[in-house]
Amino acid sequence: MAELAVRNLREALLRNSLTTIGIAVGVASLVAMLSLGAGLQALANERLSQSGLFDAVLVSPKNSFSDFGRAASRGQVQIGTPRALDENARNQIAGLPHVVQVYPNIRFPTEIHFNGNPYPTMVAGIPMSDRNDGSFDGMTGSFFSSPTADEAIVQIELARDLLPDASKNPDSLIGKDVTLRYAERQALPPAGGAASGAAAEPGFSLVPHQLNLRIVGVVQTEPASGFAGPGQGRLLIPEQVAEQLSAAQTSDLRELLSGGTPGQKTYQSLTVRVASTSDVQHAEDEIKDMGFSAFSILDAARSLRLVFAVFDLLLGIFGSLALIVASLGIINTLVMAILERRREIGVLKALGAADSDIRGLFFAEAGVMGLLGGIFGVAFGWLIGRAINLGTNIWLARQSLPATTISLVPWWMVGSAIAFAVVVSLAAGIYPASRAAKLNPIEALRYE
Image 1 (tube, rainbow, N blue to C red):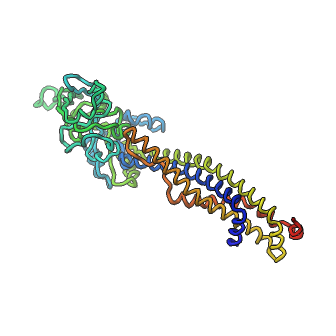
Image 2 (cartoon, rainbow, N blue to C red):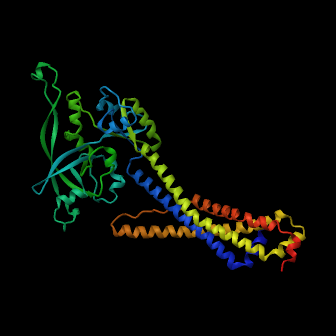
């Protein structure tokens, strides 16, 4: 049956080739659009994975300013004093299974001096584990040499502020020194003197200090600036150095008003890194059981997957329109074949061919056109995707940005596209096949 179908297709080679090309164009448009959606989704997952967000949990005290909005929206605002996120809590969280690192998110407003001029800015502490963060891919210079080095990485906006002359390259700051001026928080001494044994007054004092830093790099963006807490850091220093400074932060006012224990070191928020993304939910649940608020990017990723699913669906619908139009060409081709081959059909029926045999013959012809069109369409769609990637990378290179892949054709898409083309072709062949099977053999033999 398949051999006879191929022979029949060869007899009207031009018309059948044009129909097959129409199917190929439809499949190519479908593959090109779906590959764009798959590539963008893979790019988003890769960037988020490189940023270290998928294996991290943000921990904060319950009813904190950063958590108040989410809790209120869920009707979970609690009354009372929340558990302090102090050193004991940090050690307890660090002892959880699969937790590999716990560090505070330190950000504080301050002032730096460069060439005798003051510049207000926001300082952020960055752990050494962020060395491989995707945000540092385009960094010029180098990362911190050690966790305790008096070094700084400057964000590009601050670098431009430090060099008001537009003709100067921000990279020229590498190797220069800046002076960081900050207010160190110190607990007030016990009332009446240390020897009196009296209780400490609730409060603290601020003592001005300064620290000289060597600029070792210039980065485009700060890693995970929105995830780690409010305020975007423009001057990045090693996390251990930032922690040793004991600089006053915005959370200190909240602690003072809430009557926190003087001298007790507390944190506005902590970042908890786990061994793998599969451990995030378990760690998040255990931290919540301790009395803290916990949030991971996986919570937002669920909505992101829904957005990509809808996006892929829309791309698939629009890409399928061309294939549906091509199916009309299959119907037209096979109907014309019926008119041209009525005598052949009559002879086959006279020789004992059943209606199912005639129907199967036309189904085979439709299936062959769908299979060939699907194969050529996938190849053409892959070439379109390669052209999109090439054009995109040329444009990114002109913008001094790293190359990327925005169109991706996985193997499941190849098989699915070919199968879909065959199914649509068979569906288009239902009417012509049924019409051919119903031909009266006597009328068919009379046809001139």
